[in-house]
Length: 127
Image 1 (cartoon, helix red, strand yellow):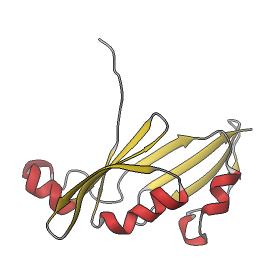
Image 2 (cartoon, rainbow, N blue to C red):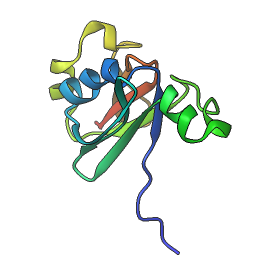
Image 3 (cartoon, one colour):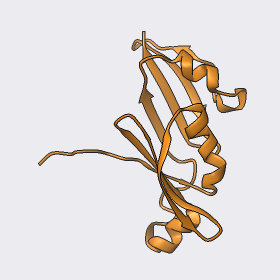
C-alpha cells in the first residue's frame, strides 16, 4: 500500500474572496472550478506537484450534509516549504501576515500568513 498524494480541502465561505490570495500572491493555478448556486462551489489549485482544494461551506452542505461543518472555515493550518521565501514576500500584502517573518531554532525562515478565510499558511525556507 502506498499513498500517492494528500490534498487538503479547505472549507471557505466564499471561494471568490480567497482566490486572489492563492493565485496572485502564492502563485497557484486554478485547474478545476465547479459552480454552485451563483458562485464557485469547489476549486482545485496547483503549484508544481502540489494541490490545494477549496470547497464552499454551502457546497459541502449540499454534497455531504453529515460532514458540512466538521471542518469550519479557517480551522486548518498548512505548512508549505518553498525554495525561496523572498519572491512570495514581494507579492504578499501587509494584511496577509499573521505574524512577522521569523527565523526558527529548527533552521527555517518562515512567513506566517492567514488567507481571507482565516486558514493559517506558513511559508518556510530552509536557512
